[in-house]
Length: 174
Image 1 (cartoon, rainbow, N blue to C red):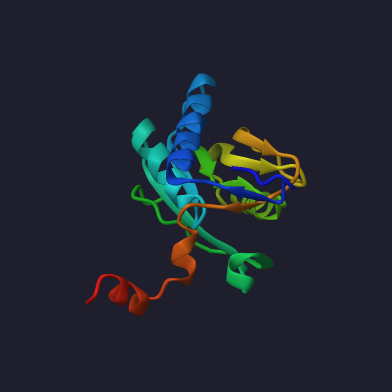
Image 2: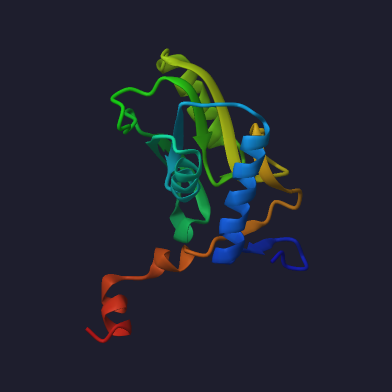
């Protein structure tokens, strides 16, 4: 649900999963066949996992991080892992790069630059996200929602960002 001022988008678990399913439909309708899904951890892990199951393709993971300050609301320096975790030993062929959103576009631009320059076995690379913000300098190949007002997206699992093991123990009376 987008707030009236357009500054916040609140997404339920059902909406989140429906958007991933719509993303899968868009990818399928393009008739592009790929070999591997490469998700960007952390935001792309959930959509990447679901897409991996739907398309029955191996899931590779590349860790990136830039939102760490202010409970994940302030973008900092971008860190990109040097290695990709993949069950096939090396990522190669046609690769679908998956993240949750194209925010500023900085992360996706940097990752694609790194992949194109450092991973010669990748023959074709396309990108898929759930949301693309209007301010993004990156335009993914596949996206479900364009957000021209650039709202902060409150994803359904955000509550875990501030939940401690002690709080869980208290909740479950352990």
